[in-house]
Length: 150
Ligand SMILES: [Zn+2]
Image 1 (cartoon, rainbow, N blue to C red):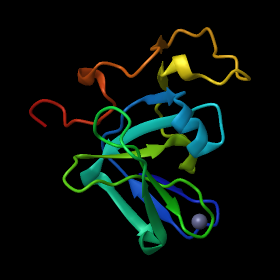
Image 2 (cartoon, rainbow, N blue to C red):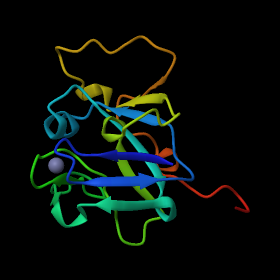
Image 3 (spheres, helix red, strand yellow):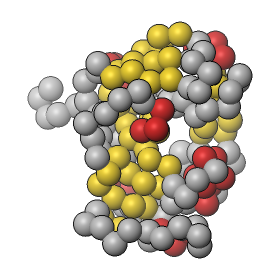
């Protein structure tokens, strides 16, 4: 069981079951949304996710579509503004940012994406992770899937 929450503690959530490794998104939109150089994004199984408290103080913002669906959706705590998990009706995964978790998700970074937009003031590490200048191909989108036969 992994738990997380927002800065003020009003919103709390938990998940268990599957989770993807973490991708570092350097897109300008993610820089704006976080005030940082990149967002550490991961996806967890929707059927293992639940709000522990504060779901009623979660606000949603849908950024207009730039190129192709899905549009960028942000979910955040109305009180403290922290990003919280993004739950979409009918999707088998929930997107969240690793920094909102209390502890170690036992997942690690596996790729950098949208490096063509990376911040001038941040030096992208010359690491062993996959580096993408733009969005990865559709087949490699970050989403958690049930294992075959699972
Ligand atoms: Zn809060």
